[in-house]
Image (cartoon, rainbow, N blue to C red; front, top):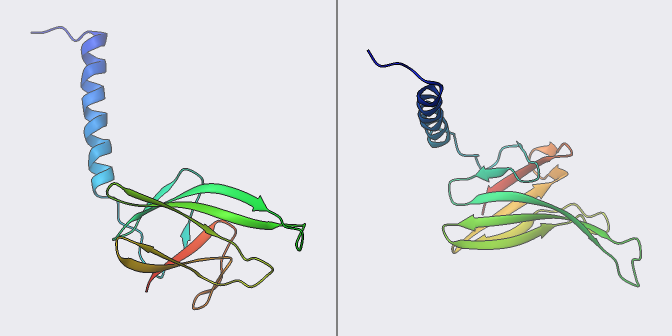
Length: 129
């Protein structure tokens, strides 16, 4: 009968954990269009046609508006194509951001959805156009 060494136990544990993680990732449901979805920096959301990752915020200002505008930055990916998009409420008009990837058009909403109402701080809604 073989003796289970710490090294063998660790190797077996590593293989089992890899399989479990692969199974969990493969069966993770995709985010749906038209639903309120939470987002966080570094978290990748998988939609049927692309992935969306929140990259952070940046602020820009101008002479006409020295207080500046706060932008929420995202990376949109389809296969080997990556595109950066940024949403802002500008001077207060909360409107969806229209973006295109892989020949398809989508809308992303933050702070307020035209159809679903107010959104929490780290929530968004994506619509297929």
